[in-house]
Length: 386
Ligand SMILES: Cc1ncc(COP(=O)(O)O)c(C=O)c1O
Image 1 (cartoon, rainbow, N blue to C red):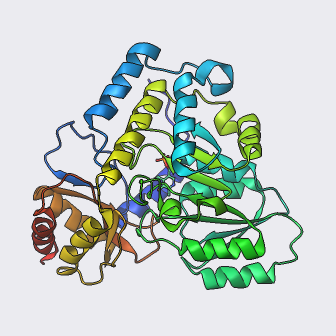
Image 2 (cartoon, helix red, strand yellow; image 1 turned 180 degrees about the vertical axis):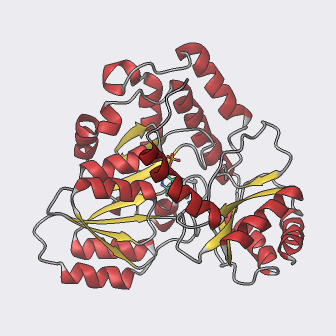
């Protein structure tokens, strides 16, 4: 007989699940096949690179050369020439002197914000920053104060209020926000940094590949990469590979993290094949932009089509288009109906987004048919019909 869980534990585990299920909020896993029967607008492969022949070939060649695993944590033997080459490529591309590759963006954020801020520091963060950043910040012991989403006037007020703060003052934001696809005025943020001298951490997870004249991100597009002390980016979204990276102008951050961040020190490192695929993806992204890619126009075309059905869909130029529906059950139903008609979108519900903020999340990707926005809008209209 397999061991049965303690009944007290069982009850404790069951209660929140029952609560979620009753509210249409329980999550389940559904394995997908490699050839999915839908157009995928749910993942984060914005540049359509996960199946790009060059990205795949680079990974295969590295698998042949290095094997399937890095086989150790980076400080033992896990850090390879592939990782080092990727760091150089990323640093040169984004305009930073130093880079460090991570297993995941979650680990990178948790490490940066769990290891560098200390008790006595003050962290001012956008209210909607990703769970990985919150996770790090809560572990750090620093004081966390959140400002309203994108509200840099409020941030400025807080900076003035805390101008005599003894500890280090940090400002933490995403560039493109993962559930809303919007972003702060990074030029204004840079001006605030010049005036107030805080330490700035920017998560570019959803901007890499899409934004900027070479696809290096929103900091590149706004010309303010020099102002960010630490950038976090991912390899598994716009770059179509897997893993993450951090970028620094000052080497001290890299040295400190690789010595003291447990997520880095005590974990088997990213397989070299992922680093090789990511490096190939950087080159693909640069080539796409050099050839005149206009991602903003693509985003606007989709939004215009979707707004004919849900007028509250926000304007913008990022790859993430939230379609606000509010009600969780309605959102789930609409996503199911869309899937039945051949379109896979995310159904995002609390607690991932605030109460009442349930939405369909459409992730755009390059390479879809020109008629796709209009066809999707029609499918959405049917999916929302009562
Ligand atoms: C803004 C943001 N940062 C970090 C992450 C984590 O990245 P990864 O998926 O590589 O762990 C995510 C992923 O969902 C994200 O949306």
